[in-house]
Length: 344
Image: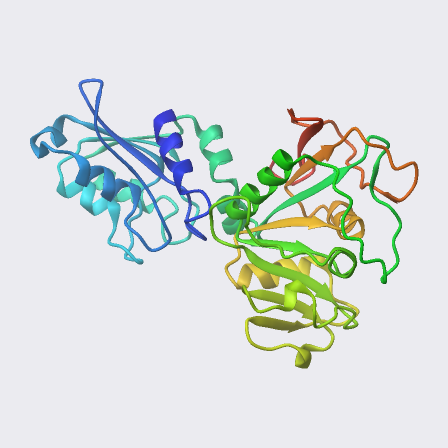
């Protein structure tokens, strides 16, 4: 099953609203086939693993391990449970059931009805963590939200700046840390910043220091403060603008009308309806605090550098200890997971 997880992670950032899934077929304690879900709409992990087996006569004596319950419905691909039955596989071990309404136990039921011995719950916690984005999207009806910021050693994310200040961002992390952030961008469906960050830093919000697809750009510009020259309006990638003036935008910039009553919960509901499975929030402090105060976040990745600012924009505060701590050059990276979410 751990090998299934390793394989599944190879599809990170490519499966969109589909889960990451790995599959391994074992005969006499030897792997005879394996595969993973490469991309949205492509063959499922079970199909690829079955195709990779050179001797089909071994299927009736083999065990198929899969990180997620095989599907039992016709979607973009035929049902995997039927293929498993057709191949004569007699035993299947699964980490997690698939909560997607079209599956949700139906795959297990279909395989059992065909006389297959099915075991579920193998390394279930690890499997759920692997597919935490998919599970939040399906069960929580919103994207999986990751907050990211860098702060100085004395707890500031930036100096105080006026709109006309065009100096750009004050880098706290090293080149290695910046490369890691671009890798993270490539792994998520969408990236978001607030109006102040766009005005002050004019970010591109794309993937440059890593290989991968650019995420969907998202921002809020209630009063039309963002100038036409901003990179986020350059039409180079799909962008969503939440605004009170939707008529201002066109092309690859999709505008969604909001009013004063519009809350983060409404924004996440809208993104969910647009099939955005995950949201990477890069700034600024006000937007981060809004997510933290509302409880509508799942994970936070916080860099702390060695430099000091003495004064400026105070970093957001998360009122509990980090789940992980790592070091990248001179910066400390702390990873927090929201312990206040129901069911977590």
